[in-house]
Image (cartoon, rainbow, N blue to C red; front, side, top):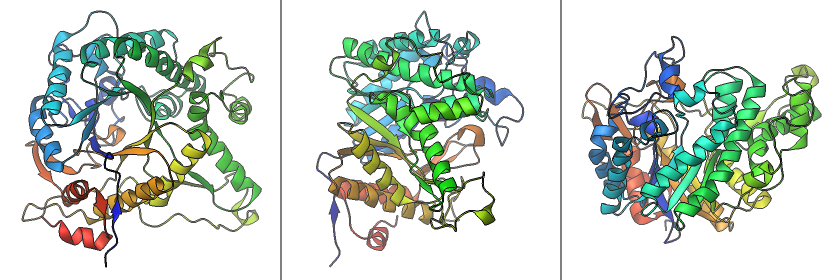
Length: 465
């Protein structure tokens, strides 16, 4: 007999996208320039030399994409608002044509019985705000809060789920510390200030959103990476501590009232990123504001981290006991569904958010349509099914996991990788904008309809297009 893993009847299955990655229409209807527009225009920034000026042309084709969501059977759609489309210079006069687009999008979703799940900032800061100092500048905090109020005054009568920021680690560390994302800076002091102002703007925006949209449930989305030392050695355990501290705890701890982790503060002092252990960008009352109560935490999960010390010669270190699997996605990330369960258990045990959503999970594989037009993306099917099983195990553990958003609905502009990496459930021909549902989309449709898993091979066999 085939076993059945059922999800709760109110479990929210959804799909996710972000504005910059799919909308296109970069210069239409009054939209302003974003930092990613500027970054992509600089030679050598994007691996394939592309930009997102057209992307998936979702701005003009959104009805078609909402039809795909309805076909999938999802209960919710997580999308982001393009800040420069609403406020072209980041503050001041509202671009009504831009806000009208999201008004229509929300209405069309609701007409299909799909709940809008809005992200206010998915990385596309208006360039004009960056020119004034951007996230390392404290003034940007107030600009974000005002922007959140503008959006929720218009949409808050219909939008019941909203998150402030998507992945502040990426915005601050990759954008200002490592220079891999927009705006492409390499300054750790500015990266740390950016991280703080993102968190502060989140906390202040939570209360501002509740004031204009009392029915809204508000949270933030973090990308979290469960971390393991490669061996029991002191050096590997220290490497794991440092990684976990800078990647996970630097954001989780202040959000849940613990302030910034002191061990990581001292790591930054030793590295020369800070002159002393007092954080110069933290003002009186900031940490209290950051820890404002939220209704949920969004967790984006893709892979785990196995840390091997670089400070001790390998021959002198302990033998590796935790090995990364050879199974990897096109991003080079290890396929590690157990890491999803581990990160959910850790967040629940250490921080106890009242509700958790998996706000992104998915995998990049480049499978293209075959001669019959079918996209046989078996690796993505296996990736998703095993992560669904991990989510089900978390629910059985008593973790308040309320929903699961697939990343991504569409192949899209994958930031620094351009169009070279495909995360979508739907294959997109960027030349013609044709959409083709991949085999993984058919699998997800089946599982969502059943609200249950059986066995991997059994579910795969039942959903061949």
